[in-house]
Structures are given as structure tokens and as C-alpha cells.
Length: 308
Image (cartoon, rainbow, N blue to C red):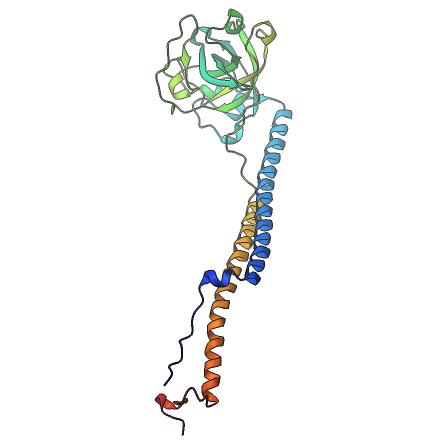
């Protein structure tokens, strides 16, 4: 009695290599590529919109008139992040003996140093009320500009004498996370790695602000950069503060999911084709049995017995 051959299940690769499946795959891959590109475009749009919002905010802050420092920040108080880049006005006297250079700072791609000078505040717009409960007038770190050498000329280190009224952009005090020993600086001011109020408080006497000011203007004026003074710096920004636009970000995820779905759909088609071939062969064998095929004398009775 001849034994019918069991249905042969074709492999995934054998089905996938069929011209029809290859053509479908190419179509789906093209669709996935389009979806992927649209997702990348949405990501670009997400960051572009975030950057535009940050630029608009910066422009509005730059256009705003300076406010008295005491109106927005008191000495030894926590620094709100939204004050970064806010222009303030303050009056005091520079203490050049405490002047430092902040190492490892670049301007227009050139490594150099920030000129950091303590300002003993005498008027922050509150008539001294902001430090009335403290031990005395506070000190404010002021970045007067940038120099390209650790031993700049006298013009870069010279400060206006007496009372100085200055305008400048606020920036949050830095941490002391940088490691390494600060080298000596023979012939120049002491070096530091960070503008950290917690560390400067040990060097400069009196209460201190949890921020520093990037100088934009002062009366009387300091030596201009053209005459050897420190080079002015751009407005500081909050690093990482420009959040990605979430709407465009989720649009990008949707496009990428659509692309993956196109590939997954092709895999499903191949698997269905594999299963369909097996079912078709089984159906053909079953039809021959029910028709009393001479090659199958057993027939289709119950438990393999001949049909009655």
C-alpha cells in the first residue's frame, strides 16, 4: 500500500526569494525608507522649533532694560534658572587684589581665560535691605571679559577705581566638579577652573551671590579690547535648556513605527505564503481521498476504516 508523502513546509528563505515576494519587499522597503526620512525630518523640526523659541526668548531678554540686581536675586539665595541671561544693574567697587583668571575657556574657537574680578556691592536697588541680615555687603563675581594669555598686559587687568555702576548678564554659579590641580601662574593672577561661589567664598571675604555677572557696560568704562582690555563675551545661555518640541518628536516616532510596520507586514506575508502552500497540498490530498482515489484504498472512514 503506497504511503502518501507528508506535506513539505517550504522554508522562509525559499518563499522570500520568490520574485513576487522580492518585488513586494522592495515596495515595502521604499515605504519604510520614506517613513524613516519623514521621521528624521520631524526630529529636525522638533529641535528647530525649540531653537527658534530659545532665540526668541534670548532676543526678548536682550531687548529688555536692565533691572536692579536686588529685584531679582539676593546674596546667598538660590539661583532660579530662568534668570540666566537676564541683564541686571549693580553698583560697587572692584577689589583687584582678588582678581583671578578662569582657565580653559574659549572665545570664537580660541582657548583662553576669563577675567574674574570681585565687586563689593554697595547698591543693588534695595538700599542694602537684601543683605541687612548678613555679616556685611556682599561680593559679586564679575566676568569682565576674555584674554588669550595667562599673563595678559596691565590694560587687561586694570579696573576702574572707586564706585562703578555696571550692567551685565546673569549666569548661575558653576560647580566644582572639574578635577586636577590648578597650575601656578607666575607673572599673572591666580588661576581657577570654575566660577564657583562655594569655592570663591573661601577666598573672598563676606557674603557672596550664587551667580556671576558677565559684564556688558560700566560707568566709568574699563579699558576697551582695542586698547588691550578684555574682549567682551556673548550673552550666556542655559545649557540644555532648549527642550525638544514634543509634538514633532511624537510625529517622528509615528513615522518610524509605520516604517517598521511595513517590514513586519512583509514578514507576515511570507509566513502566510508558507502556511498557505502546506494547506493547499493537504487540501489536494484530502480531495483525492474523498473521491475514492485508487491509490488510497483505505478511504476516509472513522479511525482509518473503510467508509461504509
